[in-house]
Length: 403
View 1: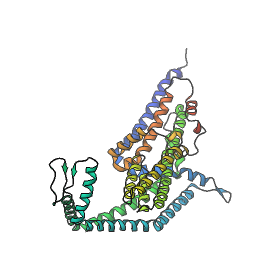
View 2: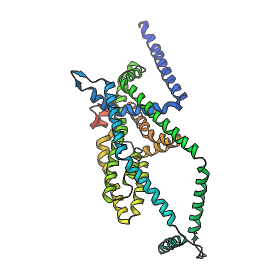
View 3: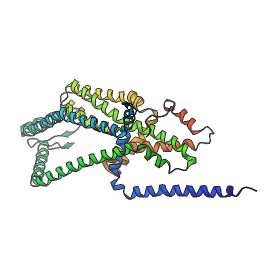
View 4: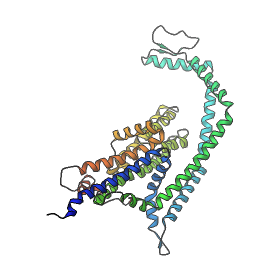
């Protein structure tokens, strides 16, 4: 006859599993109920994860025979961050301001130069080019008669209508300038407050990273602890490439873009390089969107310059695809471009630009969990850890960046 505790073991195990499931459901319900306020905390978690390896390196240093405390390491990182921001404002903001002022002056001068005679001359050149290439479009002006066949466009009337609408829009909003200024000041103050709030929460996450991780690990049954640890290591390898790797590649992309713009003498180099750096945070689409204005502005100075800067941009992205991505991100962090595109579109449709920024990290987390579950469900008796080593030989030694 079997001992009584053997009959109670399955029931006890089911009871524990139900309790753990209830705890996770409670956490999910709380997060869903307060989803409107999760964005600052998600940003703080990303910042804490981003600086975690640097915090670890600093805390391993010894000063007077004692390790540097985590809070000191975080304060040191924040001090370096604000120093970098200050140097950026000192060095780059005047350049950006001058380029924005130059854009305004050039735009105003171009608008004032659009006399009827010049519009007619531009229309004539454009119409000649279109007809020479077999496109039956007449860019007609009041002095010309539209053809009986093909398309016709009164360019002068189109420009006049656009200028009239812009002037009317400016007059409508001119009386509301006080409210607009107040909204801008309010938005700036709120943004600064939110930045310091996110940095403060990120500091709390960084200081208590290990206790937080141990607490959430305790919400998993003990028999699944080994699987949980391996899954966390896999998620860390994936996220470290997507988050830290993308930021590193973003900075490299911005620097190389600035070098190319200065080398070829493209106008508004600092402004365009800043836009390229920021947009590089969004994979695929950000790169395309930032490249279009660069090529167009270069083409305004001549076809050769536009073609040269296009080749430079293609070279940067080839370097990124074939060298930087494998070296910085590694194979564990690479996600198929189709999944990246799907996650970006889904994130933008659901949560706007912020959703697009968080889309790829979330997708990498989901893909890591999905792949681990797929390997775990294989009928092959080879352990999951061995499968992961076979799948990712270059990362099998583990990750020193685990949170």
